[in-house]
Image (tube, rainbow, N blue to C red; front, side, top):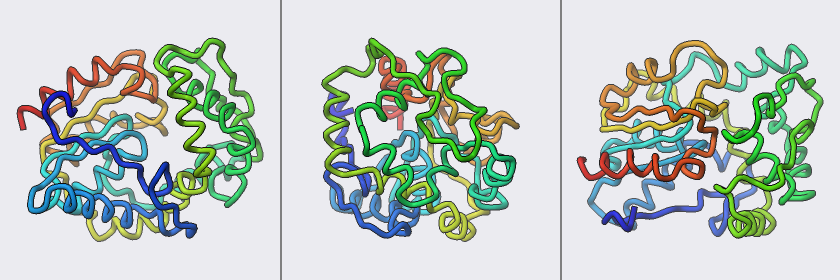
Length: 277
């Protein structure tokens, strides 16, 4: 983005890297993180609306920030996770009914009990990251993400450690990520998943709004987060909630790590869109 002429800022979201890591679960609600983005934008370019881009949890963060603060954010782009509007109940209630009540494992349900997922990830961060990154990538064979585990299973059960790892994640990159998570721990990132009820309550104040700013969305046909629970076409639903969705692309064969797996294709979509704003 900087090479393309933009003033680019890639932040460590609270809980990650060099940013603060408050202990309370509720410190990681969407409301708090959206406010972080407002304050960062104000610090970087006072009086000027910013453009937001986010991937995975970053996508709901930027969608909801644009939705709630159109005065601060003039355009928004999300990767992997579409904006489907505000549901009729908390997503925690949804996955409890679809998975936990049927004794089926679901990773977000596994993340709910404080300390359990952290202990598994922190026991060997390199092993955890390698298996997790590969398991939901487009390079993993079909069925590499186990969907038939019982609710009491661990996250890594059934995941494989590829050798060699696909070229889109170098050893140097992995070393950096391992070092960051070893220093910071996994509590902050996992706390984001523990805020579904708080997020749902906050979103009720904006449930009738649409994202009116120019928007971009990119995902992959093999991204498990694109259409996580099946059902209606996510792009079609998005167009009802994001009427100015100018770019919507689903990359064939791409898994969850959109910008790592397909950097050239992502930039070819992203940079012209940004320059046209």
